[in-house]
Image 1 (cartoon, helix red, strand yellow):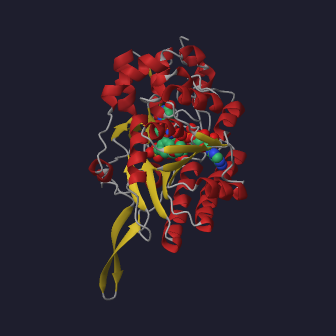
Image 2: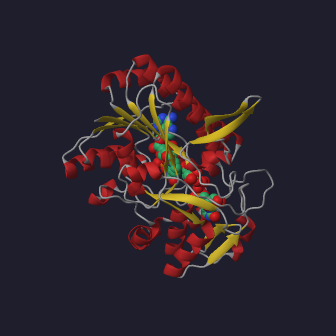
Image 3: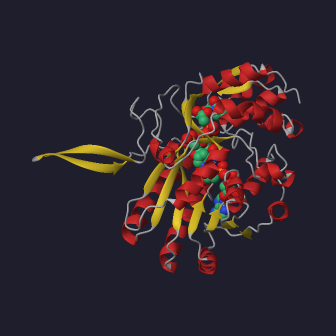
Amino acid sequence: MRVLVLGGDGFCGWPTSLYLSDRGHDVTILDNLSRRNIDNELEVQSLTPIRPVGERLRAWHEVSGKQIGFVNLDLAAEYDRLVRVLEDLRPEAIVHFAEQRAAPYSMRSVPAKRYTVDNNVRATHNLLVALVETGIDAALAHLGTMGVYGYGWSGSAPIPEGYLTVKVPTPDGDLEREILHPANPGSVYHMTKTLDQLMFAFYAKNDGLRITDLHQGIVWGTQTDQTVRDERLINRFDYDGDYGTVLNRFLMQAAIGHPLTVHGSGGQTRAFIHIRDTARCIEIAITNPPLAGSAVMVLNQITETHRVADLAKMVSEITGAEIANLPNPRREADENDLVVRNDQFLALGLNPTTLSNGLLEEVTEVAGKYKHRADPTKIIARSVWRKGMETAEDLITELPAADN
Ligand code: NAD
Ligand code: USQ
């Protein structure tokens, strides 16, 4: 298939682009490299030495013999160029990763909140309008998030795949209806994903766009079968307090001898997926799209759920790392249940990589190898959900210095 990967220079987009290319798809990446600019703004770099995009693409051509195209374009701002790119490439499938994706970054300041909403909402809407204007009937797979459902809203009831069957009381008896699961975002970033959902529902209904919204859990791991083929292909590894996600942060912290930064009691339960499975799920999604005129297809892109405290314990048992229970800078439940349906991906052939069989490999081969690149001052999460919230900043002198 001709596949356009929006946000294909990022943590999920890069390995997915290589995977799709390796599988014989004709891939073009579109990215404005804004994520690399945010690294500069935050004065932090990926733990792994990611190469400039041109060098990445040349390296892929050398090792695989395959070409991946690249377009530097701001999806949120350059609408006319986007239309021209779509008309030139006429993609059969589009994968949409191109949004600001960190919840802590989206809460750190007024400019960051405004940027996250402007960037994400406009990027998604521009894409949808451009598909209608050009008449390109591509299968669109968007990376949404498990966080659109919120945590704890429905107690221990399993979270369905997007839609909930409800009974509406009427004078003539109950009507059964299928509705989009109520949105309950926990950050400005997560809120943009709930807004995306409404735009998708409208354009699927009104214009017959074929859309799959992948409600993905937290992605962990770094390397895939493609990114290991040459060091110039290495994937990004975020570990800082804004962009680092919990499990990769714990793995990196263990590698440099920093205590594991559990927020509060660690009773938060979240859904996880390995980066290799992200890439596989995307191919499954674009090759099994909904029919025109159908509602948006929602797939929960997760393979397992864990409590943060249990992850810390697991990493600590393997590595001997200490665990620090820090003040939680976020407004979130201290504890929640989470049971998630993911039947559709399993039925479509996904064979999940689970935590136990990939964990050690990550600690030793990636975090350990590049630990000299870590800046320990960037580890503590400093973005707070409300002014005046306590952070771990005051405890920093009490935390043992990282053994870097
Ligand atoms: P990332 O920040 O590493 O990658 C996003 C890419 O999109 C970057 O390369 C960035 O430069 C590009 N981009 C952003 N705005 C753009 C714009 N206006 N125009 C063109 N390019 C733009 O993020 P990621 O971790 O790869 O996440 C990708 C997607 O998957 C996001 O939408 C995110 O919400 C979703 N997701 C990620 C995770 C995770 O754990 N990383 C989990 C669930 C869902
Ligand atoms: N947490 C810690 N210690 C840390 C970092 C995080 O205890 O050092 C806790 C957080 O407080 C939270 C949980 O771990 O309770 C998850 O935090 P996270 O930063 O790993 O994940 P999150 O902010 O939810 O965001 C990430 C991605 C986002 C994606 C989302 C999927 O950055 O793009 O949408 O995971 S999900 O969480 O399923 O909505």
